Image 1 (cartoon, rainbow, N blue to C red):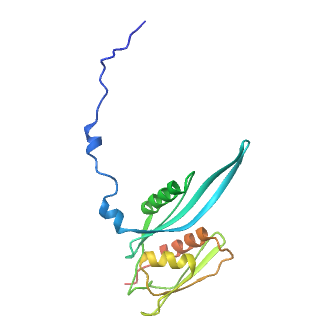
Image 2: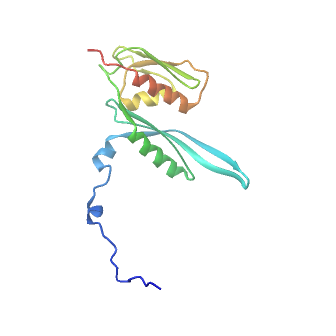
Image 3: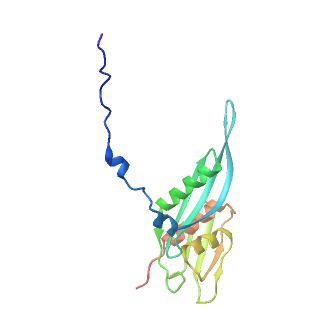
Length: 172
């Protein structure tokens, strides 16, 4: 019988301890986050129903960067934290010219369809619900919008708004 040596050293990696956290404090505080939707979802199994929570979080720096994160977890706090982390991971940059968007844009996601129009200075954020939250976190101050789709689903409307903002081109 072969006996294992009990004095065998476990390898220690000192660089692992010295690593800085992924997000520094400055970078985390730079973004503002907003919980857009929190839904209780269930999955039927042979033992019964498994309940989980789905969180939809929008993060933005109010200067042209915006991200959307969707995550599920057994606990509300875990779902929100996970969605926030995903939103920060999937940031997009949008062109903002004089506190508005450069041109009119329309986008669709699922049954949701949104229309975004640029407005003159002082008009304000003329948008409802989901679009208002996304645009305010992106830093757009003057915009007119309309939800043209057949759904009131906040997740699909947020995705459609993000798709519309991705389509924006900076005019030279």
